[in-house]
Length: 412
DNA sequence: CGCTAGTAGATCCAGGTGAT
DNA sequence: ATCACCTGGATCTACTAGCG
Image 1 (cartoon, protein in one colour):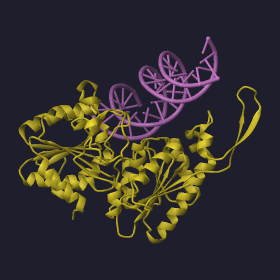
Image 2 (cartoon, protein in one colour):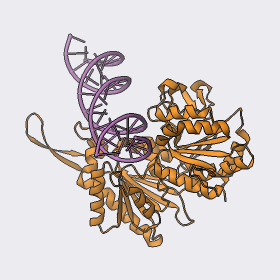
Image 3 (tube, chains in turn green, cyan, blue):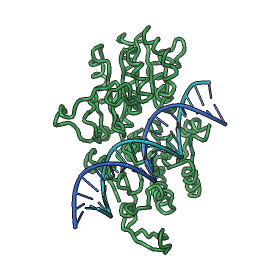
Image 4 (spheres, chains in turn orange, brown, blue):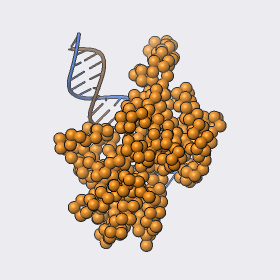
């Protein structure tokens, strides 16, 4: 059963996709169900006789496996890339090695190329010679496929460069009523998605949960440090974390490793999750750590607080198996550095403790997207805890600007 | 003239992935 | 196990603008 936005987007794509307009960009907020839309569109294009093969590209194996499950379920066909299958799913990394065979495939058949989390590929100004490896591979494949479908919740790049294959317009051509909710990249060009589904709409439609974002601060921070030149000890008081961070030599990253703020954020998360689990016993929490060592330390802290924890990092070869197990288990917490961020679908997660040192809007929204996906009628809220760092605060404010009044709160 | 603040670029590092 | 490549953060340096 499709949601209304998926039906609308599907109809628009089916009208638009043609030899004159072979590219379609769907920008939908994380958790809205982009992959299901992609699968249903694929099915419709096959039925219409426009395509007979689908190539899916994603950034990580976890994302690719997730997408393959959805595609196989909807199409009721195998996507292992072998004889008789209807398509193949690959990571961008793997694409470079399969490029030649895929190009040949495209020449003999009609291929739909789905490229997920599109912001990973770049081609600044559409310049082939400046594209990154993933952008290059996409451009090389483009000429051999019939249609392309780009999917992203955040279709811009932190470095401000452009995405390949897509339409950009000069800033002066931009309609005056255009949405200003996206961060403006410093370039003069703006991307025009073919369909946009915002977080605001998703919450109003009951597709996504209401996020409550709580930024932890402390109004009396005492720091004792040794003066680098005089060697004297000095004690200073700060009224807030932003004020403390203005002091040279005090870094956000150091705060993340400091006992008091770390424990405070975790305690808030633990308390919130226990409350949620009284009514929703399978509700889970996500901790995004700054490094593997940091993740191990956090795991220890959670275990000390009698929580069940699953730690997944790239150092652990069983990480992907553990991720799969966590999906349907009732373990309370999952702790990771970067493996449970982009596109990983664990809908029972409803609480997040953000303790990563990454401070980009991309990452912030991606992580929030992990807890926002709604499963039932009774799980309409999710909770995000982080430190009151100026950049994070700005991202949170910008998010709430984008939301219906009173639906999202920023507390400090 | 010197000081300060801000910015751009280069370099290094860490985490993650896949090919060999 | 090693390598190459993706991302993003931290740090250093060089340059510029503004100011007294």
